[in-house]
Length: 270
Length: 265
Image 1 (cartoon, rainbow over the protein chains, first blue to last red):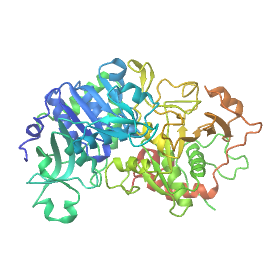
Image 2: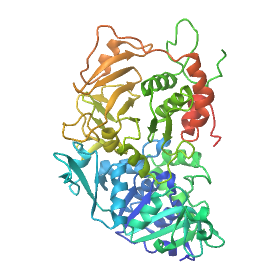
Image 3: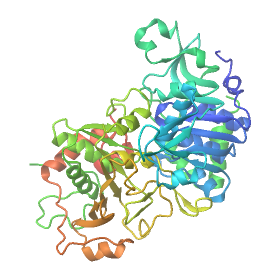
Image 4: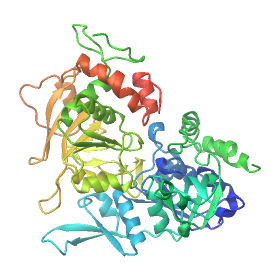
């Protein structure tokens, strides 16, 4: 359960994997993402719950992604996500555009083991028009009330970063409950954590309330500052200088390659 | 009353001619948006929305703690404990009264485009994506649109991609929708029945002719268009002393640039 190395924990994320990752504020496994880029994973079907930032941009720029399903990819205050933008306009990746609550609902369908979830909104939008896998039905309990049905999203692997795990494989996620939804929906879940907790998280009721049972967790690797250069809520803030550097460098293909050399491939020995 | 200093940066080109006080564009917009929020129970603010966030926090300062403010990405300005879906579930039930959306393109029928320019399969320009707009635009009663680049490339006759439509047919569940569009030049009100914007006021230093020149869609124009009221000294004081430090938790770059404050979170 507790892997000996980051690479060992990530072994389950193979070429062509349907990989679910969380939004920037919920705990993004960036050390793991760099390890995946170093390993050269290919043809990922990346699903963001419900948006992504640096993580998706890095994976896309490094050629790891075939399809991305997301509500948005952006670097937030640091501007557009440059490699995502370049890959979409050049046709290098396929985008399945969604809207945030649709992804939340589709993951919820998977965790309930039901084939679909209904959602309001969407009707009349081009988001719906472009999604041939989404359907509109008439509310069977109403009259002339069209509503959208979204098929369940069942990822192969969910990957995120959290503050704590214990040696029994339980993970403390606090109030970022969509991490639990991701883990429930995915066939396997890989987690990196800041540190190991001595004892069992379920022994303390206040910790248990924010815990994800190890039953759902396939592998855990310890990765201190594992969300860097993004922040980990309540633990450390994002490295603004680094993110500004990234936005500047990744604006061009050459600059992005230099970024990878400096901050991703150079860490191989570490 | 003495105002706390603001950081370096240009003030409105023609801040009040009597010289009473100067303010930044961001402060004017936050003040106008706070007025639009009015008496609400719960205001939520989404991604990449520092000025709406400032406006929501300003409305709460003015209302002595009302409305409840939920800022996406904030730990402090959020009561959500059930993950990202709780915001949307709240909205679906009618527990969010006001929300804010922008668009790479916005058209005269209130349709917004957060996806891209050109053919969807082969876009010439790609924006980040629709975020929660394709849902929240339908279910939040008062959606305030904001677009700080008021030009013919952003305010267009017809959007290239509809992330969310301005209005819907009668049989579509639609308790919500746009009420206004604020830009760096003016404020438009949206009339749902007529599916059209009407010019409500023009910001100090700007003119109706300039708004017409830079707007790519048709809109209604009353014979007399008022000037957008400047923020009061009290509003500026609240923004600079109370709102700015709270804003810095989620928008550190913006708070530093506009108000010269750091993140103390």
